[in-house]
Length: 309
Length: 284
Picture 1 (spheres, each protein chain N blue to C red):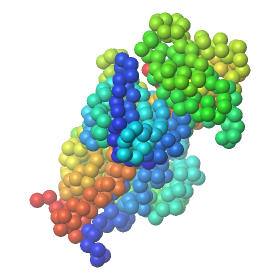
Picture 2 (cartoon, chains in turn cyan, green):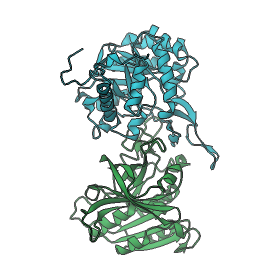
Picture 3 (cartoon, one colour):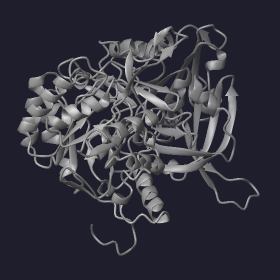
């Protein structure tokens, strides 16, 4: 670790060879392609940028309403609307090349073959510094969750994708399983370089006046502070089941929330819903982590990560 | 557009179930375009968790007489109490802190330069949909355009801000479903009549989706250029969450052409939108 002459704590972390200046990154789908947030925070301050999930072909996504607010949380059923890999390569990544922050591209497929093909295409794109494999979206019938709830299927897609890639592979796990540790071990064994967890929890909101479900899709993914205790438990469990780095996600709204995930052993964290509430949220979280470390005499983040007594 | 912490100046009930909220808003008078909106956060806590989008009703500068205080730039929103979030908003008091993100989105467009006289305009508002039309009327009047306003609502208590428009010199026609104010019936019937008598250069409309749908059909028949301001559920307001999308003209399942109400709207020209696939079907 480098010396910190101005007595600011060291925040650098390493995710499978990907060096991050700090452990903060946005969660996929809450930060667009980065550009949308440039007016509200300095993107160079972030540990990494994680893009909206991309698929082989453009996807329309689900009908509206796609959103519902629930106590201390929200449900979304966007349905992985995205521009497709071609337009992503031609248009969206251009902006990200202008900044030095590592770019993590989240991707998914409708079929096994599509997952592999997207991975191949991602290899050809300059500045894809790492990828995050989404096998956990609860809002689409075809891809996503089908691959993320069965350890054998998950392992098969992870190893096929791993074989095509030259950059670190992060696998994003679903909480909608009986035993997340089992899934974590399966993807680690299949070649995942890191795990991010958790994706959203499947939920539902009901309108008693109109006697209908709030979301056009019926169900949606629950995120926000409401899911933090579940996420902490699962991250803790996964950290104790694998030896690859784990990125903690789930309802992080403040520096204190992020510190909790790091304390239970997450090497880095992703901030999701907080970006939607406050587009500059990650700046405040970063400052808060630094302040906490300085107040508590933590010189380097490695002294904090997984240091639960 | 920026995200600021600021304070409530006043929060008054202007009609049963409708409130007018004034917020200290530096630079808003200079920055805001008619038709833009803000994302308002009323708590540090998680109830409500998400901000709510509100159209800007007007902006201005308050100067208390006999006061030593500097003039106060402010913006005003008008909201209808419809659910949990707006219910909590009724409890806001002067001095309370709120978070204000904005001004956001694309507003109404008329004429390319400030020197152009935009041509006569017909404004159509349904209920709370009158909100973004006030600043528009102000700007059109300032630029020398003739402006008429058609307002519709269920009942007389849903007809807002008539006095404010009349003070601008805007001729106002009202239609209510129950006939308690103005003529009985739909505002779209008034629109049809007006358009048949005079070739307006612009029609600007905001209101519930079924009303906008009818307005679009009438304007297409009359070949009157139409801009509509849409309302949508939003989480972020900055084009990231894709929660507020509406179908664009070329939309199909294989060629998604979704437009973000927050970023590409909330004001759209009628031609940008896909009316045939019933934007209304998604609003149920």
